[in-house]
Length: 81
Image: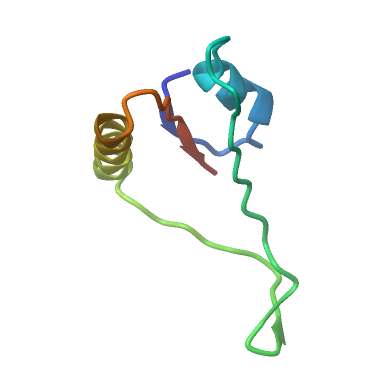
């Protein structure tokens, strides 16, 4: 798996963890977004996401490079479902 991906199947946190974990690092920060049950007082039944995958992946990679430039000890992986 590349460090940046857009997937249609459920995300596996352990896969992302394996991409960034290393013995000399003291922590791995993992953010998982979930669908909320309500928005603006109305029930949420689903989310729809559309993107031009190639462009979205380039932007995700750009952000990863920027973070790793600003924080050289950081390792970044991003996946979106």
